[in-house]
Length: 229
Length: 404
Image (cartoon, rainbow over all chains, first blue to last red; front, side):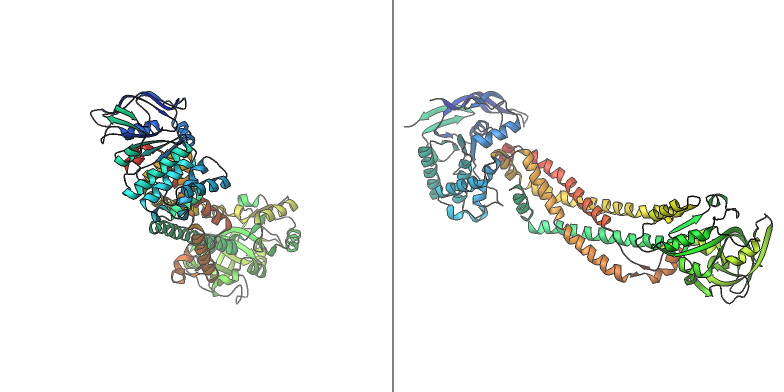
């Protein structure tokens, strides 16, 4: 299967301290469309850095990243912002919804940036909240929702832009076990039914158990890449 | 949605926003009232000077203003007077004979401008009769009455009914003198009237000058709202051989003060808005810095930096201007109330009069002043929004998301 995401010999070195920190070391990886992949490893192994580089949030110090054949590692900041808007969905550990917008508006927001019509935005946002089983919370602001509900809104927001893939950085870290289970089931169903590509970084064994591919990192390098049936 | 987002962000910290909005309301109120109070001072000075001294306009022989030679009289003054009286904007007209000379009492002598007036006409134009503090307006003295300003009378050490001698050149260039008796002493805020003028009856002056008639100066007052410069131009066009000037040309100091009113307001705006701008910047910087992660996430999701910049700008503009209408309304109400009743400063009337002001001041703000204040607020809000907005767009999404 052709790679949706291809990282070739990427390295990331931070020079913020006297001694340079090599977060990613000459790493190469391909991720195909429809994968449900977890990037795992101990703290500081480079999971989030890798996710950020694959998501166009950060530049590799060397190497290239192509998404659907387009090299994003040389893009300007403004080009990357537009690219992310149309190609990548994000789910963050701390949900990171916009607190002054309702659940519906949070989902609508990204479609507004894509300049989609109000009618289309509203229909899609309602459909996604329905799919996430939180349609009844559409008019609630994030502060009025539980962690699990907020994260479901975040997933709806990530899906709203019709991205090529969704990056989820430790999405279950702040959730209780029931919410975690529900969220994982939801994302697994979307992956199955819509062939949506999910890439997680996680410590959570429950996420690892659900993943169909497990990439293990140690010191910024892949030490194992396990594909499950 | 950017505007909705900005508006909701403004009310995120109600207390903090309320302090800034309250400061803007008080700032704008103090600007409108302060501006109106300053205007009342300056307008009082200008109106006093126009009413008692220069009038709304004057007409002279073109060369008379150069050297005050008595031969430069206005050609056929009656036709100008008739023309003026037919003009609906002209309220009153006064003819004057003006010569420079000396005034002497038994104790002192000094240079003085001798103004020969028609008492009735003069009372209507300059309200000279209203300034009489002692004695009477050209009455009570059977021959050669004279009115002197209070300071001049003190300088000469004369009182009502005292005798003074006026000396000047007659029409043939000979020095001539006349004995006058003080009919009244004027209490005027104008130093020209108070110290430098002696008012006599024109007929008496003509007799001493050795001429039957002749007018050096025609002064006129106009109805409120008259465009004095336009009227002067109209009269000038009708009588091209004479020199017609409005009060703005006659008294450049008054023109300067009129322009100064606008400048004072602008300086006030600058000072108050500068202080408020720092408050706004401080509040917005706090708002931006505590939303590092949120702004970072917005950029990560695909919000262009220009949109983030715009959002913070709208937020700052809303925060800065939402109080504007309340401040303007409060200012307008205060000015309207005090403008109709006046601010009574009679406790300081002596001091005020000595520098040319009335003791009751009427705050007044013009539409252009309100517009200047609105423009000042908008410019301040715009400038104050730039730094917080710039700070917001410099955030890197990776650091913003990780950093908090």
